[in-house]
Amino acid sequence: MRNNACEALKRAIEKYRATAPLAAAENLLPYRGGEGGWLASPFDGNSWWTGGFWPGLMWQLWAASKDDWFAGEALRAEELLTAEFRTFEKLNHDVGFMYLLSCGARWKLTGDAQARTDTLHAANLLMGRFNPAGFIRAWNEPERVGYAIIDCLMNLSLLFWATDVTGDPRFAHVARIHADTALREFLRPDGSVSHIVELDPVTGARIREHGGQGYALGTAWSRGQAWGLYGYALAYMNTGDTRYLEASRRIAGFFMDHIRPDGLTDCDFLQPTQPERLDNIAGACAACGLLELERLTGGAEYRRAAEALLDGLIDHCCDWSKDRCGLLTHCTASYHDDAAGVHTNIVYGDYFFVEALAKLNGTDPMLWRK
Ligand code: GLY
Image (cartoon, rainbow, N blue to C red; front, top):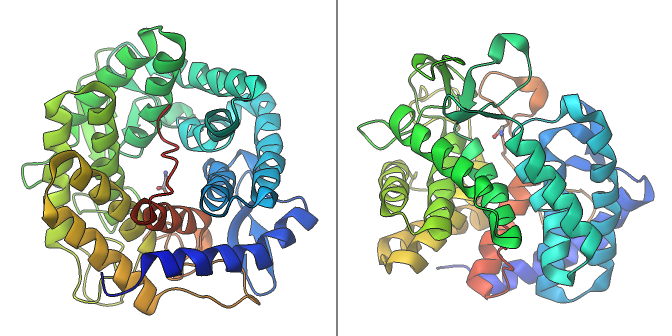
């Protein structure tokens, strides 16, 4: 790698030491950074799916620095998130992101019993979304009762976690059923993955694919590719099932074929050349998955690709200033939804960027697993 990952991680810790207290001062759960402060999610407040990335980031920074301020900040955020158990009907399949990186992380790193109970509660919420026709329901709108989405692959980690800590195989069994459905319905012959597939909620038969957060129906939303790449690598780690490893490798192959010369990541790999629309969250998340693939397979090409992505981010898209909050720039929530953020900082971009640096630095606590 051209840049020094250890140095970048140190700079991230310094930036966050300076700016994270601004979130604590307002008792808010950041969705994105801005000039002199943090902004909460414009959608659904603390029940928005991204809430876990802030405490997850604080735990990553704690693991790398052993600065207890970060642990206290993670706990403050966790308390906001566990209060959201009472909103129940706003929560969806993204409870894996929300609670594995908050109470799940705290249990892993401190052994706190209440944190374990809360994480288990979240796992049971995810189990409650399982449709025995063969998939985990993504969202709550009545017209989306049969929707399954690729993002869920990452959330399956919460179910594998629950089986690991309780010894009860039901959780992992459900996770495997969903992962198998996704192998059949999402993974395309060229190694790309669909974002949304609607299944018949009674029979499980495929109804149709829907366009999601990418450019158009049938294209390749880059963050969806990253969710699939990393999600299947995690499913393999949790099961030893080589079909999941093969899926992760196929998606990785497709992703690596689309890495730009500057190391930045297009929002959709099949988008028009103009306007330029980047989503560096996808690159940061894919880098994490690629580093795990290198560890699992010894494949040096995965390491080289992860380093190209991280070099691109460090060279072009890191805001190290302590006056502005948020580190990674040019993150895009959704190709067509400007309100959710286009070419801006978004908290889960910072999370995955720091997780990838932590992997290279040997401090990643691997929050996705027990
Ligand atoms: N899980 C939704 C997203 O990636 O934007």
